[in-house]
Length: 202
Ligand code: 5GP
Image (cartoon, rainbow, N blue to C red; front, side, top):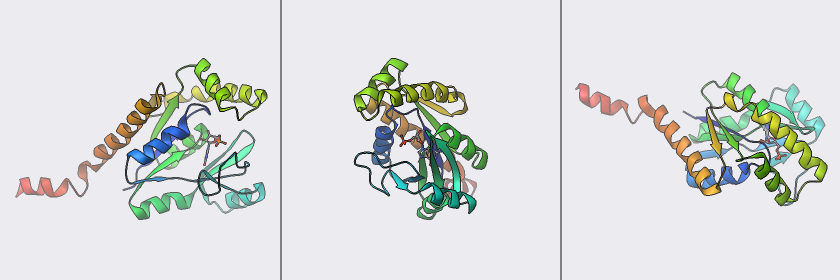
């Protein structure tokens, strides 16, 4: 049984680093590589962080109902292809999705037992510092990201877990603990437990 872990956070919250750490720390996780119409940033290569396609290609894929969810974020499309979930299922792995609050809402509708995690920077000031330290964005983009963050944060209550990213090591440990605990909770009646119960009934 594949468990779906949705991770959302305003940009600058340290989500990508945390997700990368989580993938290293916990085995049997499949990271969902999204499709996007935005341009690659810096060192990004297609197939690693994202698969980059044109708006026309994206809209054709929407028409073919190929996405499990998709949303428009900062003027670009982002979407999770159905094949990511199928791939995780085939490998017997759990799926980790780094998606925004709109995508999380759509997925909860389709996969009600998905586990959702919201990552928060400790304060607006720290989020602003982190966005500036990244020095990837213009002043205008930073201002927009901060406004978007304030909006996104209002959705935190819809998530199962909130992780405050005060220190990356501790926050990554918390994420790994959530994944491990959810796995234990879900395997109650699975193959490992059934024979034990049967042995007591004999
Ligand atoms: P960025 O362009 O900074 O990599 O990502 C912008 C936002 O898009 C982030 O909040 C990220 O979580 C979100 N995002 C990335 N992939 C997907 C996706 O497949 N679906 C949705 N709904 N959001 C996504």
